[in-house]
Image (cartoon, rainbow, N blue to C red; front, side):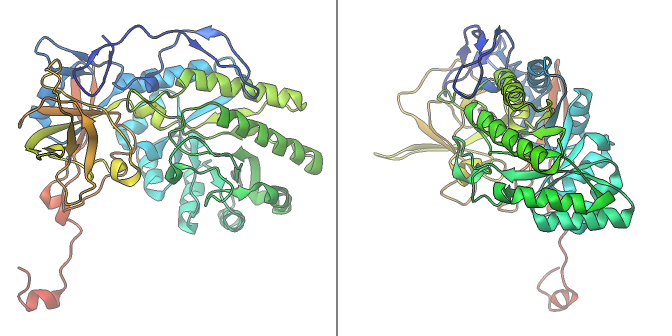
Length: 481
C-alpha cells in the first residue's frame, strides 16, 4: 500500500495518474507513460501500516527498528532507490547514448556505492573523502566524475592516479593545474568544462549554482578562450564536453531545457570557431522531491524524458551530432528513500503561544531547516491513525539553539516515548550532519524485504574523543586527567 503523508494520520493515496510531458515553448511534448517516480511521494516506495498501527518501511516495523537500533535513526529504503534509478533509466532508454551519475554529495557511504553500481549508475564526487570512499568500494574509475570549485593538487593527482576519472574543470587556474599534474604523471586528463549558464531555478538562493555571479564554473564569455587554451596544451588534456548545474531542489523542467539550449549554442560556436565537435553534454542534477503536500516536483521519469527530448530538438536544429547525455540526480534518487526516526520527549504548551514537542535529535542530524528553512512532514510512527489534535505542535530538537526546529505546525498527537518519523531525509541529512553539542551521529540502517542492516554505525562517546589530544603541559598542570 502506497501512502501519502499530511502531517497527521497517514492515509492511503489514490493511484498515481499517468505522467504527461508538459508542452512549452522550450520543452517538446511527449507521450503518456506510466512509471512510478518516487520523488513525487513524501513517503518511501514501500511505506505502509501494519496491523499494530505502526509505520512499516522496507517490510520493517519502524517501532521495532527504533527499539533495536536506538534513536535518532536514519532508515534508508533500498527499493525506493531502485525504483528512482529505474525511472530515470527508463526515461532515457530511447536516447542513443546516455549516462546517469549519482550525485554522491547527497548521501555517500560504502553500501550506497555498491547499490548504485549494481543499478548501473555512475558516480560524481566533490571531495577527496568521497573519492576515497568510491575507491574503497572499488567503484570503476571510468564511471567517476570529479567535481568541486577548489580542487587541490593532491586531489587532482589522486583522481588521475586512480584511473580514467573525468575531471569537471571549474576555473582557468584549475585547468592549468590539471594539465601540469597530468603531464607529470604521463597521463591524458579527460575533462569537462563547467560553465555558469545564467539560469536561475525556483529554489532557495543558498542552493542555486547556475546564476551568473555563482562561485561555480566559468562565465560563458570566457569559454572560447579556454577551449583554445586546451588545444595548445597538447597531449596532457582532452576536452570531452561541457557541464552546467543550476542548483538543488528545483521543481520545474523549464530551467533544464534552457540550459540545454544555451549549451547547444556553446557547442555550435566551438564547432564553428575551433572545428571541434564535443561528444558529451552534462546538464547536472538538482531535481527536487516532495517534502510536504505543497511541493509539486516534476516526476523524475518526466524530467529525464523532457531533457532527452530537448537535447534531440536543440542539437538537430543546429545540425550537431547528438552528444552523450549525462544527468547527475542525487536527492531525487535517495531523498525520498530516507526516514529519520526519533523518540518523543518533553512537551510544553505555552499559554497563548506554541506547543512544543521535543525529540532526541534535531539540527545535528538534520541541519537543513535551520540552514535554509527547509520544510518536512512528520507522523507518529507508533500510532499512525491516532486522532488529529485541535492545535498544531512545533516539533523541536534537543540542541541549544532556538532555531533547532524540525517541523512547524505539525498536527501530531504524541506523548513521551512515541516514535516520530520524519520523511524525505535520505539526502543531505547524513552528509551534512555534525557533532554539535558533542553529540554522536546516528546510525543508518538499510531496509529491504523485511531485513534491516546497519550501513553506518552509530558514533559512540569514544568516537567523539578519538581525535582529541591533550598537550603535555596541560596534563602537567593537572587541568586534565
